[in-house]
Amino acid sequence: MPEIPELKPCPFCGGTDLRQGIDETWVRCQCGAEGSGASDGSKQRGRDRWNTRAAPKVKPLEWEPVIDCEDEFCITPVAQYSIKVYEDGLELEAISALETEWIDFSSKDAAKAAAQEDYESRILSALDL
Ligand SMILES: [Zn+2]
Image (cartoon, rainbow, N blue to C red; front, top):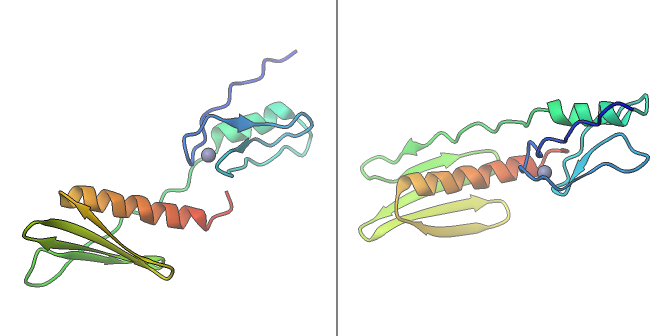
């Protein structure tokens, strides 16, 4: 009997709680990501497909400076982000069609990383993984 290969972590969330049904060839992660099945019914081929699938990459946000201050902003199809620099700290503002959120950060790098994470989660949530 051929050895069944180990499943690699989910390329989308890094999760290792993966399922392959008894009579199924596809592999599914708890995050909703699902590998393609094998039309010949081969469980091993379904596992191989899971192990070789690539995660979609979301482009990095492109920040624009605001003239005459240290603020920066970024407009995307799914949300608008702005970093507002105040004397007592930084604030990241995320505006989407559904909500506006303000979060305090101590550095621009941290604010940009949070914006990137938010942006990626919005983009990936729209994909059928
Ligand atoms: Zn996952």
